[in-house]
Length: 222
View 1 (cartoon, rainbow, N blue to C red):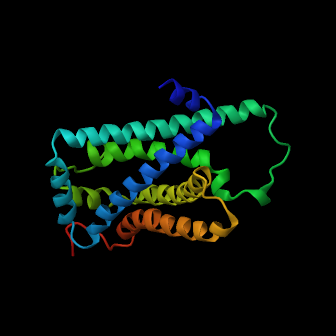
View 2: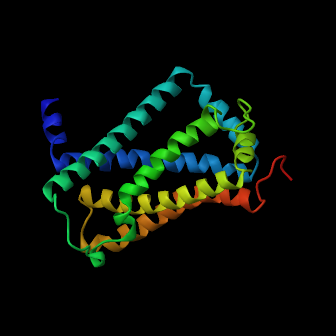
View 3: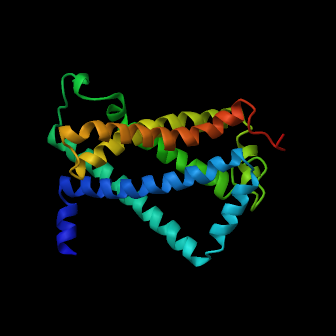
């Protein structure tokens, strides 16, 4: 345990923690996205999926708490790395070298803040129903579509999914680098995998608010 704590106190330890928790979050996002897009086939598929998850009883809460712990570790490591970077160069740079960075990397921290705000709203919107205009317990597909009928809400979800895409893109690229998959012979494959995962996850989630905005998803279904 002392060795783990000692590693955690170092920058490389925090980067490894971010990489490992990032991989776990990616796996969760992929599964969550796949379940969500089934709404385009039949909203009842989401109801059945939610019922299946609830059938695990206390194990579902174990999974939720584990996911929460992973997210907290990821956020804390990111925040502490930011503080360490600022302490290392308190004066900052006189100008940014944009040629050696990407828009995604330069907005990584703000993207993280946006996603954190979104998660709080998302839980209040679809999990507790506190800010949902007409929440029906257990009717997940209906709740998702009705919640997206508000144009500002759908636009907020759409903008956040674009932000998630940038965050996901740079984060996935960094995970490969942190875990040692950084070699000229692999970088092309690494880039392709990063782009495909970003399009799969962020693009899949983005389809839902866009579907609501353009009338593809309506309640009751057409």
